[in-house]
Image (cartoon, rainbow, N blue to C red):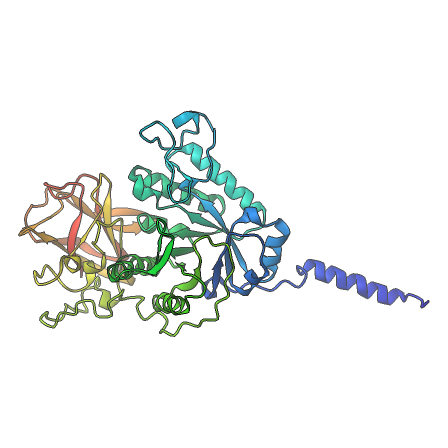
Length: 470
């Protein structure tokens, strides 16, 4: 039996303390803007999750120590949180349909409305009681040690437009309550422009794939769907993150043996500078695909699905005036409050006006037609000195659809202030030219139409072909 050396014991104690205070050899996480891989998986702990920079997970299926193990492996742990649906029915205040919580929607029989695909129940994001419940659930997840929250079911606002403002307020409240927590939104294109300042990421679920719930079948999207996802959804996301930077994750669905489809999904996501992952629809397995994107990263980031936006050889080249700060070719980004079906924001600053030879999807942008405020933000990329704004109103049925009343705004102290207000704007004219009283330095302008001030026949619409800023 050998004699213990006091000095050796001291070294052992010091080593144990060092291990304790350095997180048991924890691996440092990459900076968030450098992450390049992720997994979306809702099952119990799986060690393969450590192979990724980011894990979108179901916190209820992992213990606190398992979440810590992922964090110590250098993985960002982003936990599922539904903000527009609830898995089961909750009694809550009992003031809602069927004697359940007030935040459920009632069907024709007075029962809570259920999502037919998943069995969950739609919730009213404008209800304060729902806010309380979401904030409390978020606290429980964060207390488990997760780095962030994956905000699912935001798209409930498309089914219930009256919840639009409530959803924005809820996400803003989550950000303000937990400012260090990363919020990753699942889709939510209708509110993206409003929530962009509060989020760290967006997931584009079903970016290139399609899942048929009725026939339980996986497939690529149709060509028309590819065009829409690239020229509307993806282009909008990439314009939004030029103004408020965030990461984008593409989630597609395929059977693991569908190698060619998976390769295609990875390649297309990479072209838009999205981080790809492919799983089965239940997200109940971790797939470490031995696949490297073969496409050029970000090649479609600024141009959408069509590398050449206007590909008609009969069309003249677009306006490329270097003095027009609003043009996309001069580095400007455009952000809108909403979309009318099929109307992308890209025509707003592409250099083409109301040319009747263009397809309607490439002539103009139109907002959603609802009784809400509508607006367009133009971000120049850097501060410019401006003195004039020209708005070319959309042409349809041989008529120009000019807004009746609107204002030109610039950002100030985290808000927007009017620098010019236009009232009783002449109807039926193509161009409204606004000259400022003096030159103003700004990086952004916003064309703002308060609710009900659109064209006389359709006052809930905002419909613009092109915006120029000089």
